[in-house]
Image (tube, rainbow, N blue to C red; front, side, top):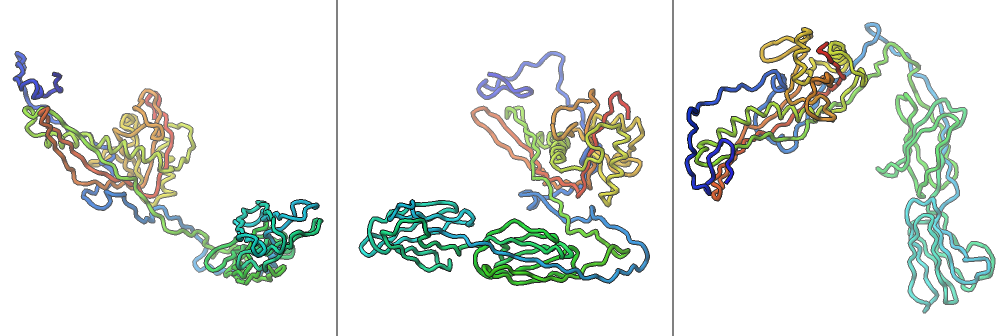
Length: 479
């Protein structure tokens, strides 16, 4: 029966006492301190259970807000000017269902064809003469043709959908030879073209609604037009807005009804003045990564395992820093980080300067820098970092995390490659680590006399709204 390393034999080996090795005495293991200056040394750590363990956290931030400046102490805007435009909506020939003959020689049977421009299927009911059978419902997709056999002589009635604007028509079978229409309904929809006169002074955007539903939207420049859009018959509300206008205008469009010109007048600023403050932003929300759980498992024969829970918790404390950093490194790969220097590798000092500069332009606080742990000697040799209590900081007071779990390239995670001397240096906003209280589960397996304990802690990591990255080369140990 095989034994687990460091454990007594299983119960099936009759719990025999192992033979001591002459000259060896069991003693306590040396103390171990978790490594320092990693991610959790620079993150804001919040410990406590909560609903965040189900789906993460989100928060509103102003740390990436942008502003501007104007000249003078009391700038006064120029008065607005007035621009005019003529915008016209022109319906084309109506679309619908056409009732046609199978051929010029035919005197019986019908072919129903739905125009290709219709926006959806249409159902037509064909009713035979009295005692000629049951009505026939024909559903037609746009552009589809369907033959209808008319074996009974007499009047065949063709009925169109309610609201189509078409009355029922009757086709008498047999009919005369020829090519004429037999009673089409062409009022189901109308292609409408929006255009603007060449004398118009501004581009006009329009939005067409029926109730609360937007039917069509676009914009037309002076002398321009838009491709046709199919409208159902009816009345529509239209809102018009010119570029830079102080307020929109509105109107009503009836389809069909021929061309509907709208003569519009808008007040717009007369030009750029020292009063203009164009930078405007909405709310910025930060969403964390998803929850993940770090664990450590301890398992051994019950006789040799007096306190498995304590052993599992001790192991968890030793491994959780590294595993949290691996998770955050992968999270950075999906953060959509800015790359101010592109993808060309540069010396470490150049990369650090670029990120410090980029951060001050796009983030309101001190950035946090993230580098693989093997790069630390290069930073220290070049005097780019110094210890400040439990943290490493740059000369400009930016925190630096030397993560033992950070990947050289988070987008292609693999084992560290210090000999190659290439890695991605990341800068982020403030990092927050929400984590639960550590907890432990224990189980006992009687057939094997084995005790198992698993210690766990759940994390959610986020960084404030800023993320940027620069590819660094420190080949030969040069900064």
